[in-house]
Length: 293
Image 1 (cartoon, rainbow, N blue to C red):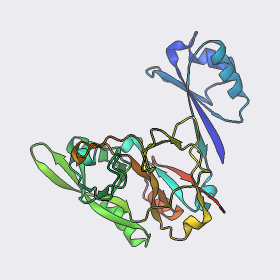
Image 2 (spheres, helix red, strand yellow):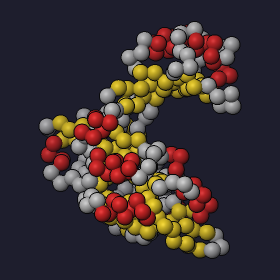
Image 3 (cartoon, one colour):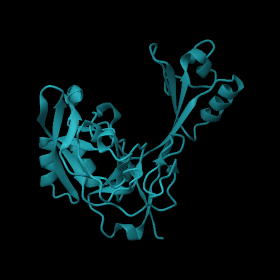
């Protein structure tokens, strides 16, 4: 594993231009991404790279602000050896769907304040205006981290014997044409993990709900590292979701106007291999860690 640091700086705030200023501390084309039409210049460095402290010092001395993100990167061997992987959404293949488009939920066992624990009861409804985003893709996500796959990929997953998964239909909603069923399926998890270990890092309580399930954030400045106890793995499946729900919430009793947080998908390397064999790209896969206590 290595940790990658990404620095974003507004291009128009660098005297003499990004290439000249960043080049003065040894940051060249190997680590600098400059696009003439882009607002930000992106510098990507290993956290152990000696150029990183020099870059930070330069920006500080010049009074130039920046945004910083840190992400762990893993080899294929490390990913294949992991007990579970966080399956992170592909932001470029996101379609709008969920409660505000007509998907229905059973709220009888959900938190009355935030909606955590809402149980979906209908097919996934997505906005018909986003239908073009599915073209040429085999998998997509919604803003609530729901995972959608085309029918052929769903069939492969079902035939693989992967445990802990079920499927729902997917419909596109149009203002005048109503709902039209799509040749896609929503991937659902039947197993929820226990609460993660407090040794997890990069998971920050942000307006934590009284139910203790929602109000978590994953700030980009800290690598997300989920940790579970060995005892938590006695009933894991190939497809699982976290007990914790992430993201913003807005719920005042009306599901049709709700903004739900969402659990994260945790899958085995077997599921990752199926996605990769199907040519699916764009998802990030992060190994979870296991401790004895």
